[in-house]
Image (tube, rainbow, N blue to C red; front, side):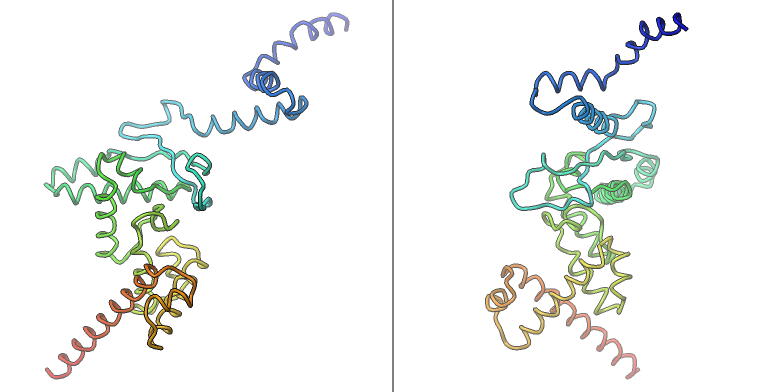
Amino acid sequence: MRESSSIKRKFKPLGDKSLKNVLAHKIGKEFPRIGGVRIRELCAEMILEVCNKHIRPLESLQHGQVLWMGFSINDPPKQYRRTADTEMIPVVLDLSCTDDIEARLRRDTPKQRLTKKAVRLCLQAHKQGALLSNCDLAELLNLSDSYVAHLLCAYEKKDDNVIPRRATLHDMGSGLTHKRIICHKRYAQGKSPEQIARETYHALESVDRYLSQYDRVCHCRNQGMQPDQIAYTLKCSVALVREYIQIDEDLDANRCDDQNKTFKGRTR
């Protein structure tokens, strides 16, 4: 019994030689007023948790993959808040894969290959709970952010779909086509808000907000109000009002085209 106690007394301190205790000791030394032992250990555990999320062993990454920091889907931007103060999510992205090689062998154009790769990166990040900005994609693909925005906006307009990235889901930068797509799916295709939310990666509340804003702008416009008057009445920017007006004009043009096609079909 005495021998067991003696061994425990001698060797138990070896278990305290851990990175967590080193961090806790450093925290207590540099910030003596932060609190007692439990507070310091809790701070050390939080630091280790962050490190474990953001550092991946080499064996966990495959050829062509890259570890990147994306913006958390659940942490939308706020005025005057820096990127350094925003929650980040580490994501693993396929920067190069067999699909890219096959696209080259098919002689796809550079524009087609870059668009496909940008879409893939956005979808992969979203699946892991993060969003990429146009600048993220520009750095990953060695392009300008304006060209990235041009590629993805053209893709969204052509396929009438939304690519989940920070520009669209967090209303950051030049990704405003999602409002047009949402309104088009509702008023041209007759889809329900719930279905639109699923197809555009938006929360149902966001879809309802865009549709309600569109309805209010159209109502004011039908009353003969000018864009600046509408903006003042609805307490929003003139640029946003003009955007919804453009959406309404596009929908009207589509309705006219559909009516003309129906009329021609009947006359034949």
